[in-house]
Image 1: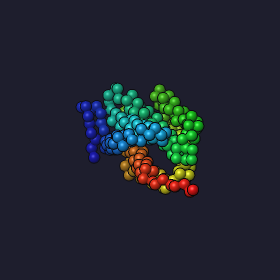
Image 2: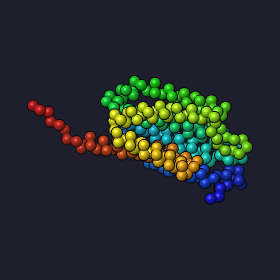
Image 3: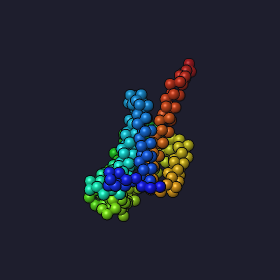
Image 4: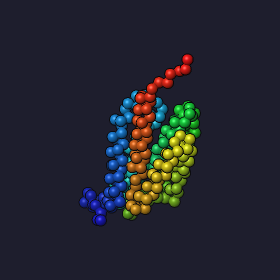
Length: 241
């Protein structure tokens, strides 16, 4: 499959770039479609509902940043490398905060979960904020990711794996919470991770992380709607005299 050239060849998109952009657009399509569905839940004012809405917004930002990277890589225009770095920064910062928000969202379903979130959220912020600072420093150093000045390619730096540390922390805590809340969620988590790895193996360099998170949010929304339905339809239990 041939490449796509735009603006008289100043921007060249490979099939992996185009595929990633389409996957990101699909993710944003699902995410934007969920916003009207969450309106009634946001009116309840629950912390879990606010966290869920925040996840939608953060995933939209992640998909937009991911698309920005793939659109402006391998470009000869002088202003495109900063835009690619901006996209990469937004994508990676959003990735960290998305993992944090998902962990806090799951924590809300523990006994006294909202109180636990309010008590520990400042500590939970430390990995995400630390990674965000590293990413902001990276804009001037390129030790995490950078754009090759000769080819315009977006490349990972020698310390890119530092970004994964926060993901591992939030994933481990999230899996522990799932074990307490809904063990079926662990199976679904494993399936999603396996699917992401298979897609990475079959379609090398095609990013699908924002889309995978969008699928997770669809599942969470369906679960929330199901809980609300049963709560509304449940018959009150009569107290024994």
